[in-house]
Image (spheres, rainbow, N blue to C red):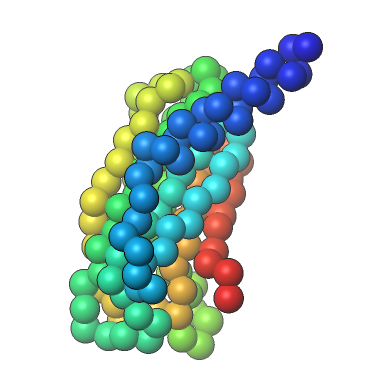
Length: 139
């Protein structure tokens, strides 16, 4: 019974989180990537960009939800791969608000030949990464 309640609450939290992320505008150049790990869930929406395009600032909306009363904080960051496979990791954004809190940011990145962008969500103790997840677009 306890496991069923925990599963139900986790599913409800995930559904509530996705609802707060909103819906991205419907056009081919917008994509949303999201993932969930123990204690955290997050999503990144990248707007108005095209693979390999250069010289343009690309809008990004990202948000992360802390969903575990464990004393740890959660973080989110945009990750990418350039044409040729070079990985790019943008700085982490942190939510220190505790269990049940959600924090969001609007930002941009200069598109200098990105092949794909995704999201990484993690739970931290200080600067030590405890667990994480990533999501990339399907190709």
